Image (cartoon, rainbow, N blue to C red):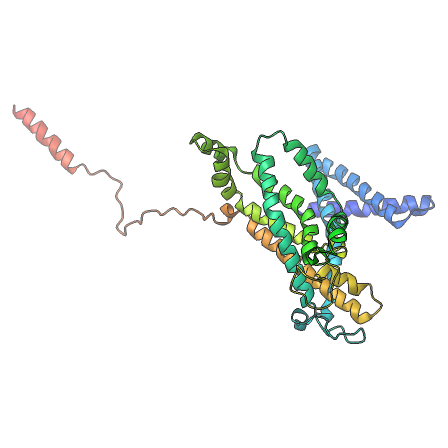
Length: 381
């Protein structure tokens, strides 16, 4: 984008704001600030289109207006994200200390400072609950994705509808389902089906499974059909082709789908209210007794009236944010295109030139002597 383009954009913005101010503030009774900026934005796009059309024509004007609109949408989405991350960092960083990762809330009272105690019990609970949920969800989600993409069964359509319906299911429904079907009727007879991390993992797996299934299905669609056809042409069965050709090709996408599923479920709070229940002390056994997690830790302390507890909740939110951000970074690293990253520029090695100067004149000494000899012989004969 040249300096002239930037000047045209700035002039169009100033013109649109001035025109809207004239219409809404001088000629009419005015409108709210939100409607004012919305109208000013669309007027800006119209003015910029007219100015660009006069300079570069119809196609160039459309291209530049769409570029500005997409860039504006990116900024609009980025502003609340940056504001949210900055707010959590500002609120949670003063209460975050290294002791947060090695202590629980044993002996901590609301009158103590925010740096007292820690959230080790919540971190351990989150790791165990999400890890167990991944253990149930990844095989089932991957198998469902392979069934939807590689099989030719008539059941693919109803299974796909079921997966799509589960993808839009609220997470609290999964917690209520586990609570109503397992905890209420079976908790009195078996501690395994009472409030614990195992029940929380079952609730989390119900919302993690569709996420993993859809992500793996998208990756499987990117595998070239030529690889499948080549395997079938060699005489391998369809199951052998899937296990030996398709799965190794899509292994990176499967790992990325698992990480994305973990990142989504690590921040779920509603299912845990009815399953894990929460506990302020360390409980490393997910199959016995209530267990804490980072979402419950945040929910519990932010709702209190104590300033120190609220700061502890923000510290837990900062730790959870760093955890999810780290998972997304790992997913991006795993899912990147290594064929482009590992491609090296081809360097041609030219032969070295000798220091002696090369002569361009042909060497005709031997040929000349040969011809003269031939002529002499002909004359003599």
